[in-house]
Structure formats: structure tokens, C-alpha cells
Length: 439
Image 1 (cartoon, rainbow, N blue to C red):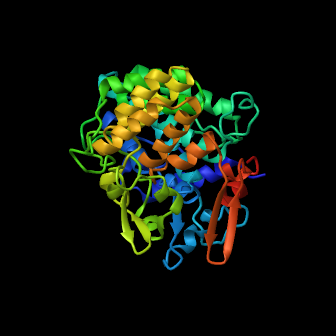
Image 2: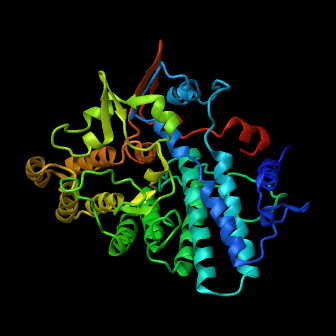
Image 3: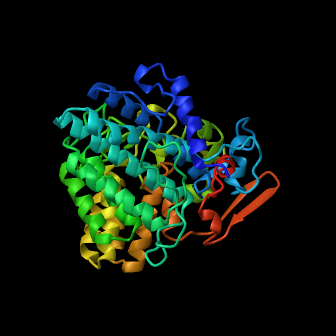
């Protein structure tokens, strides 16, 4: 029986062979040899740089896109679009299972080695805190791709993903329960809280974790766990550091830009250029917007005949893992779940006044104030749909909420993802299953 450790050995060896940095060379016994704070910082920088573009692939599975059948690159996305996971075409891109564990490998080097080798300092604490936070984020993404959606009543027995916490190439990697994975994620964020001492990273370094980024991650984690008060508390702590929203009436710019006022963690591109070329906005996505009142519409989309091209993403200046918009919408959702509808409505209105024309906002203000809890919940979900179009949120949001039915057509093929379809959990890639029968 092959061990998952052999699978990990492959990418560890690849790191050693491809790196031009001496301290990333791997010795025969599988240990890395960075020694100084500067060298460990470079290791973690490599981990940040290695963070994969899996959210772009998950976008292909949602109701946001219409694939361009005439595009030469579309074949590598077609079977993802059709949810053909069990036996995809050989040209189909695999989801980034190995790449996320690659990131975790780098964080483990810092967590397990820098803690022993580097002298105590605030810089060391910040480095270690970032490593814990980045490991938490990678595990969070892994379990939300390849594990079942978090359900408080079944999480203890639902299958999650393996946990890799040590630099041990001989350990056997067996999937843990969804609850066990979340427990580890939260343990890592708690460690990060003790160590991170930079409130907000400067522009250009905001791909790194800071206090505001960590609180944003915690708010998202607790939201997915349905721990509404904890999610709200974390969102409020993040908003104490950065609560800026761009008013699109005054400044009509994309809020996803890494150097924008809403940026908190600028690490991921949710809509890579290859998918941008191979797709259009779906009719469902376009229909979600009021084309005259919603100021996001002309920023996000451009007409291309009868279809719409998507203008978001596709370049490095729009990398966005966390931004303040998410905090406001999470705050509104959690307040509503905690039966505080008045504050939930006030929070939603505070957000949307920055996204709609004055006339559009005035109309929505009356509608929102008249909504019952069900209607307001749906409105918040739809605002997330509109605000975070093709940023990688939609697949995860669908998993944790309605798991709606989606129909995709490609040439003569029509495929349906039924409501609560098991394919809302992605199966492990074939190479991972081949190298680790425990999966």
C-alpha cells in the first residue's frame, strides 16, 4: 500500500530541484536547512507565492459562467463545467489538492523549525503568526473543496481531509473528520492571534497576514461553522482596524484592487486570465443586477454581442482574498441569524449605499426596511452574489447555503447539478487517490 508521504515526497523533491535558493535545498533525510530569520521569511514568502488558483476553477462549477465553446483553451475547463469529476478528459485541469499541501509544507517548515532556530523578537513572532494563519487558510480551503460542508450535527463523522502538521515524510496521511479539521484550523488561528503584531500590512506587502486579515479569516471560518456570534465578533474586530468602503458614486473603480482602500489580504486571483478568455458571464449572473441602478454592473461587465465579458480578475493588481465588503455582509448575515434584524438592516444599508445610485438606493432602502427575516436573508445572499462575482466565493457560498440546482450546457451536452448534489463536494484528484489509497 502506497503512503501519501510518497506523494508529498514528489513535491518536496520538486521544490529542491526547482529552487535557486540554497536554504530550500532538501537533504537526503528530507529536512530543510534555513537558519536565519531572513531565510525563514523567504521560505514563507515562497509559501505565499505558491498559493494556488483553485478558486478560479471552483468558479467554473458555479452559476456564474457560460463557457465560450469557440475558445481554444476551453477543453481544459469543460469537464469541470459539466461536473464530470469521476472520469474527466485527460486534458482537464485538476483541482489544487497537492498545491495546497505544498503551501502547508512551507508553513510547517517555519512553524516547526523557525520556532527553535531563530532568536526571540517581534519579527519572529510575526513570521510564526503568519505561518499559522496561512496554514489555517490552506486547510480551510482544502476542507471546503474536498470535505463535506460543515454541519454541526454530522461534522464529527463527515469525511474531511488529511492534516499535515509535521515535516515527516514517512507519516501516513488519513482523512480526518470535518470537525477535526476545523478544530485544527481554529487552533492555528488562536496561535496566530498570540503572535501577529502588525495590525495592517502596507500596500505591496498586503499579501501577508496581519491582524485585520486574521480576524477576517476567523470571521469567515466561524460563519461557515454557523457560530454566528463568534463570526460577528471577529468581523467587528477586523472592522475596528479597517472599515473603509469605496463609494462607487464618487469613485467608480473596482474594489478588488490590491492597492485599493478595501483591500485586506491581496493573495488570490479568483478569475484567472485563461478562464476569463474561455468564458462569459452567465445569464443568471447578469440577471442578478439592476443594470441601471447598480454601479458595479458597468465595472464588472462589458457587452460582447448578446453576451457579456467579465472585467474583474485576470491580472495581479486584482488579487483579493479578503476585503472590507465581506466583513459588512458577514456582519449583516450574522446579526440576522442572531435575531437582530434592525442592526442587520442598518448594516446592509450602510453597505449598499456605496454600491447603488442615489435613486436606486432610495428605492432599496424602503424595500430592505420592509423585509421579513427570510427576504432579508435572501437579499444578503444575493448581495454576496453580486459583490463577489467571480472572486471565488460563490461555490463555497452555495455549498454552505442552498446547494441550488444548476444546469450547464456545452455544445450538445447538458449536465445538471441537482439540489444537494453529492458533487457539491469535489472528489480527490486521481493522482492523489492513486498515491494514497487512504483517501
